[in-house]
Image 1 (cartoon, protein in one colour):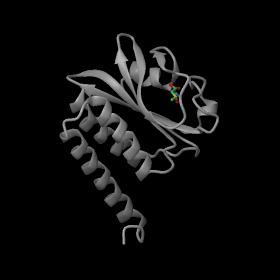
Image 2: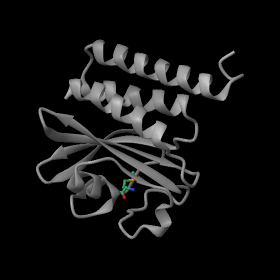
Image 3: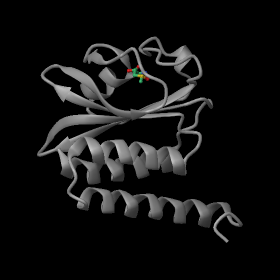
Length: 159
Ligand code: SME
């Protein structure tokens, strides 16, 4: 039933992910456990999300937090570099359809083709970011962005 109609299926899947994220947040386990489980949940629901992780603001740097996927060499990112740094500087979600043609891109894996970085806000300050890579070009559309921004809002409660 869920997969018989692309639109209905997507909608149901999004509602399901959001409700599972809310349950996680309400479970009152620690921040990093919530973030780790959220990363696993997102990858399970969206198999084209190949690397799903979180960066945490620490002074003027982003520090790698929980993630799922290959280990990244970028465990600390200065705000003047990377797509992650761009999202922090511009204080908005950044979507890159083709990472290899974006000079800001810091490579995490040769498999990655596109990326989305969504800031996490708490009391008007950016406290972290959701970072997702895909092995497909232009994998992230408006719907992905909207869902991830809602998820970011939920996850801000554990910061
Ligand atoms: N690609 C990111 C770096 C983090 S890795 O993808 C995990 C960037 O350009 O900021």
